[in-house]
Structures are given as structure tokens and as C-alpha cells.
Image 1 (cartoon, rainbow, N blue to C red):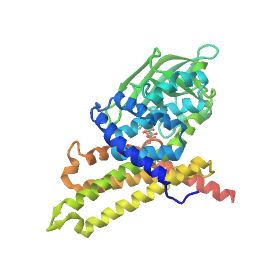
Image 2 (cartoon, rainbow, N blue to C red):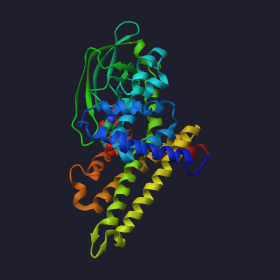
Image 3 (cartoon, rainbow, N blue to C red):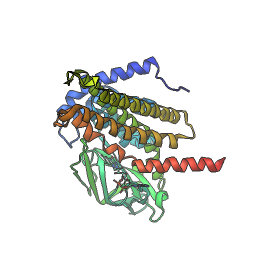
Image 4 (cartoon, rainbow, N blue to C red):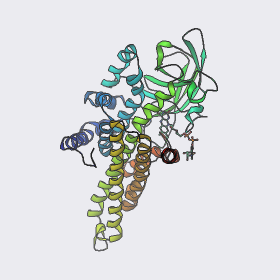
Length: 375
Ligand SMILES: Cc1cc2nc3c(=O)[nH]c(=O)nc-3n(C[C@H](O)[C@H](O)[C@H](O)COP(=O)(O)OP(=O)(O)OC[C@H]3O[C@@H](n4cnc5c(N)ncnc54)[C@H](O)[C@@H]3O)c2cc1C
């Protein structure tokens, strides 16, 4: 157990990832089209071996990757995370045939993955999902309904789709399907979002699926979804910490150079104390993320509480740090194309997705009272 500093080899790996992000991934990200999947970027993540590393990796490795990439190139960070989110259910629950068909392409960055859980009527309350898998003969179903706010839709090559196989059974009546994008009846369109990465909605008009497409067991798909989100939750915090660190670094640089009132901005205590506060909160969030990821890798019992705390603290902290960085930069930070203008758009959504901040508080409180009752 560590309390908490990284090993020299881990620190060196993080530095290497930051350099790769700045030198190899940033130029590709800059050539991408807003709201579209950047296939050249995903392929480079594959060539660099980073997508492959996702699957063997534990939660801490995943966090170190996301934090390091986010510091230099949020687009690369998000493209990597989405390959993981969409394909982790195949890696963890897929049959040999499903894994052989999709994982090599995901790993080398030629097959784009997506995770389709949310619907217009079921966001935070994911167990209320209504996309229906109608029986269509033994081991056959037809999917009807909608998904929305799905990252990488509608351009992904396959979707992990969660559908209702047993009506009225809540979380116990959901099945995960591996759905190739070329199935008849599947349509989609992009949604223009504040968040820079591609997001879309999907329509299902009697899309045929069979037992060969099921991930895990029929009616046990909610576990597939929650298992994936449990792994990824601390790493959303790591993404946030990477963004906060990038905003802090830019602010240190700017306030040390900017002339104001006969000195530099940093000479004003009102400024330097804000920088100290940004650093303090970023470091606290980082430690909590590492602790949650380490607990996950150790299989500790208190993972739900730690993961919820880490995601909540880190995403709220990053919002504060990026906002303060904008303030200390003044007008230039609001110019389109400035790093902070980009981070200001990036930092908002993680407080909503993979469990909104309020949902994390609910998890923390539930865990605390359960522990109290067990005493
Ligand atoms: C950029 C982005 C990318 C996304 N990518 C994906 C994806 O790839 N796949 C996918 O399946 N989904 C994705 N989503 C959807 C995301 O998971 C949902 O937005 C999220 O679950 C919240 O659902 P909702 O937006 O319907 O909000 P609602 O569930 O309608 O909640 C709205 C608000 O109500 C409050 N609230 C909700 N529940 C509670 C509660 N229990 N206690 C207190 N307050 C509460 C919160 O303030 C919450 O923000 C993405 C969303 C965004 C913004």
C-alpha cells in the first residue's frame, strides 16, 4: 500500500506519455474536424500501443494514461478512453469469437468503439432504460427504441448496446449486445455539443440481434455496464486532474511573465495565493484519484465510495482550476483556439457523465450509512 507517491518507472512513463501526446498526437488532433471521429488520431493511439495497454492495464495505469495525455492533448485522451469504454465489455465479457472479431481492430486503432447506455428517458436512472429487445424466435431479438448522448456515435464501427429483454424487471431485465454498425435498421445522427468530442443519437428500427451478439448473459447486462463504469469512474477523475494541471501550468507561466503595476502578475499576493490554491486542490484531487484506483486494483471493499469521491472531487476541482486560470489570464483565455478556451469547454461535461456529481454524493452517502449499520 502506498500513501501516495508514484514509483520512478511510473513517473518516467507519465513523462513519456506527455511527450508523445505533445509531439505525435497533438498535431493529428489539430487536423481533426470538430464533432467527427478523428480516425488518424485513433490509429496513432493504436500504433503507439496505448489502446492495447488499456486492456492489460489496471485502474491505476488507466488513470496515469488519462491524466498524462490530458495534460497535452485532451482529444487523444478522450479518443483513448472511448476505445476503452466501448470495448471493455467485449474484453471482459465477450466470447472467443467476439473478442477475435473486434479486439484486434480496437487495439490497432482501425475499429472505433462506443458504449451506448443513455436514452432520452433514462440518464442518471440508467435502470429505467427502455430500448426494447423484442423476442423474434429462439435466441433472436429485434431492437427498437433510441439512445442519445453516445460518444463516437454515429460513426463508431460497433456499439456495446444495453437493451431491455425483460419488461418491468428494472436493472435485472437488461442485456448487453455487441452491435456492429452496419446492422439493418440502425440509424444515427451527430449532436452539436459544447464538449469537443463526437457525440450522437442512435435510432433502432427492429435491428436484428442473436444470441451470438450477447455480451455476458441475457438479463445480466446491467452488471456489464456497472462493471465497466466502476473501472472507468476514477479515470474520469484522472482526466480532470490532467486538465487542471494543464491549466495550472499555463497560469504559472502566464502570471510569471505578464507585466502589471510595475512588476509581474505573480508579485500580487492576490494572484499568487490563487495559484497556490489551484495547486493545492489539484494535488488533493490527484491523490484521491490514485488512492481510488489503487483500491480498485487491490480489490478493496470500499471501491464504490472511493471511486465516487475521486470522480466528484476531481471533476469539481478541475472546473474551479480551469475557471480560475481563465480569470488570471484575462481576455486572451477567451479567444477561440486558446488552450484555456478549449479546456473551459472540455471541463464541463465530466461533472455530468458517468454519474453526475449529485449521483456521486448519493453513492458516498449510501456507502457511509451502510457501513454505519454494519458496525
Ligand atoms: C459529453 C457527454 C458524453 C457522453 N457520452 C456518453 C456515452 O458515450 N454513452 C452513454 O451511454 N452516455 C453518455 N453520456 C450521457 C451521460 O451518461 C448522461 O448525460 C448522464 O448519465 C446524465 O443523464 P441525463 O443527461 O439524462 O441527466 P438526468 O439524469 O436527467 O439528470 C439531470 C440532473 O439532475 C440531477 N440528478 C439526477 N439524478 C440525481 C440524483 N439521484 N440525486 C440528485 N440529483 C440528481 C443532476 O444535477 C443531473 O445532472 C454523455 C454525456 C455527455 C454530456
